[in-house]
Image (cartoon, rainbow, N blue to C red; front, side, top):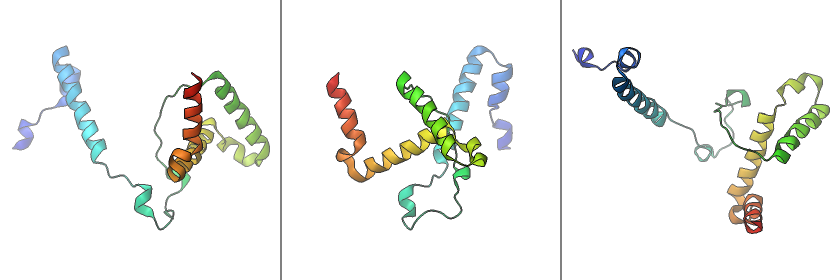
Length: 133
C-alpha cells in the first residue's frame, strides 16, 4: 500500500515541468547525499592493529577531484613521472601515473602533518608562502 503513495523522482525529472523537475532534482540530490552520508567508512584510527590484509591499493575507492597547480608544479609532475618510469621495470611503467604520484605525495605529507602538527613540513611551507605575500 505504501508503494502507491511513493513519489517517483525520476518520472518527474523525465516527464514533468521545469518546476517539477527542479523539485525532483533536489529530492534526488537529498536522496543521494543521504545514501552517501550513511555509507559506513573505515577510518585509519579504527584499525590500530596494522594494515587490513584484505585491503590492497587496487581496492581503494577513488574520487575525482579538480585542483589547480602552478605551471611549475605541473611541469615538475610530468618530469617526475618520466624519471620514475626510467627507474621502474618495464612491466610497471603503465602503473606509474601523475595521479598515483600525487596520491602518494599527499599521503606522505598528510602523515607528516598528523605526526608533527604545527612542526610539519606542510605548516612550515604554508606559513612561509603566506608571509611572502
